[in-house]
Length: 262
Length: 160
Image: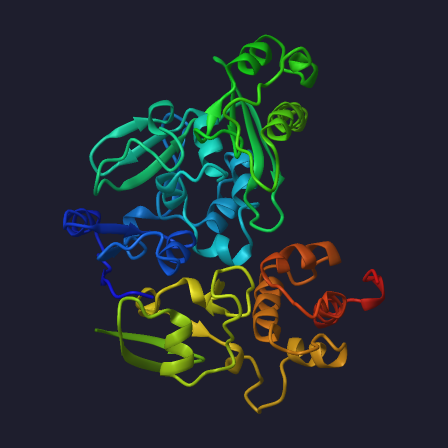
C-alpha cells in the first residue's frame, strides 16, 4: 500500500481539526475504505481514524423516542443492541459477514453512500436525521446520488437519529459474492404515513418509491402495490442483473417487506 | 513511523509501524506469527481472521495502529497452555476439517468467535457465521462437523 500519514484522535474536536488538513480523509471501520486504498481507487495523503473517539460510539433512546446511534458504532453492536428498532437491528445483522460487522460502522456506511449498501435504505426509509459535527441533515436532503452526500469536506457524522416506526422490515436480495444488496427495500409505517426506500437499484443511489408510499399509506398490505410498476430507466445494469430485473425486484421486495412487517 | 503497543496471545508487544502497516503485516512480519494467513488481501476470504478485543476481524482490513492497546489473539494463541490442541483445533483434526489447511487458521478463529457468542449453534447458524471464510478446497461439510463436535453436539445432524 502507498504511504500516508495516520492520525488517531480521541475527541471529535481533534478529529475535525485533523480533517481540516489538505487531502485528509476520515477512516471509520475501514471495511470499504481500506480495500479502496489497496486498489488505489483513492489515495488521500492523510487518514484520520475515528475509531478511538468514545463519544462517537453507543446506542441510546432520546426523550422523543428516537433511537440514537453513534456514528462509529459497529454493525455488530447495532444488530445486538438496537432492540428498540428490530427492523434496523436485523438489517445491521445482515451486512457483510461477522468479521466485517465487527469493524464496519453506520457512520462510515452513510458517509460512503454506496448505491448498494443497506444502511442508506434504513436512514431514508426511516426519515432519519444525520447529525454531524456542525449541523443536522434530514435523510431526504442527505443522499445526493451514487457515493454523493450533503457532507462538506472534513465534516464528520457524529450520530444518526432514527424515529422508531409502528412497523418496519427490510428485505435484501443478496448478491452472494459481495453480500451487498442486489436490491434491498426498507418499508416503515409511521403514524404520518409509510416510507419506502430502495437501495441497490438506481444509478442515482438510494431513493424513495413515492407511488408505493401513497398506496401503502392508505392500505398497508402487500396487495396494495399490485397495480403499480417500476420503470427500468435509470436502474443499474451489470453482470449480476439487468435494469429490468432490478426494477422487477423493487416491486417484489416491497411486497415481501410489507408482508414481513406484518 | 509510530510506536504501537498491544497484547498478542497474552504477551505485551510493541513495534514501530507506518500508518499503512496492516495488522496482519505487524503480526506476520513484525512478530513472526505466520500462522495468520493472507489469502485474498481484499477482505473476502477470511484466512486472516484474528480476534481483536475478543471479536473476529479480518487482519488484512485493519491498520496495526488501530489495534493500539488491544488484546489480540491469533491461531498461535489457541492451543492449551500445555501445548495440546484446543477443543476446536482437536475437532478439526478428528473430523478432517481441513484439506490443504490454508484457510484453517481463519476458520478456527471464526469458529471460536461463534462458539463464544453462541455455544450450541445449529448447522445453519454455523454455515451462516462462516459466510466470510472461504475454503477453496470446498471442505465445508467437515468444517461444519468439526464445529458441531467442538460445541458438544452430534455431528450426524450435519447434511452431507
